[in-house]
Image (tube, rainbow, N blue to C red):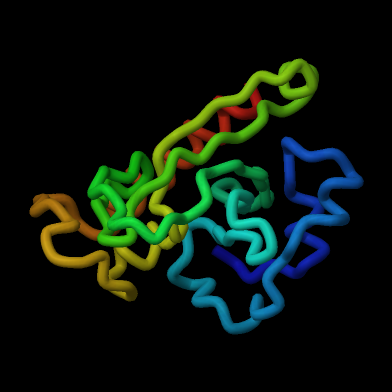
Length: 163
């Protein structure tokens, strides 16, 4: 993924109003992110941990989603599988729900999927972050094929939000 500016990130959101995009939290460390290793940029709002954001650019045009998710708890997270990267990270997965874009979203319709709670799918795939023991299945796929599968899963979710 190519590095994006704060303005590009704010302009990418497909399921927010202009006012919401102006108010959403954007990380200040964008220059320090491992952009070459990211299939999407994901982050949580530190002031409102039930809010998460995800921006991707599979076709070169950034598109972002505002997500709602459960507040991280102090309990031991359940080891469920992420629908994007097919990892079962020690930090757990969370049901991330996105309001649909357009009129459907205004009527309260939403879609959800299970994603790594820390939104680090790309880093788990590439071995840049340790998901914990037993978190990755043994597969015969190459890294490139795993990345393609994750991007396809991400695009499918994005398409469900914008449909």
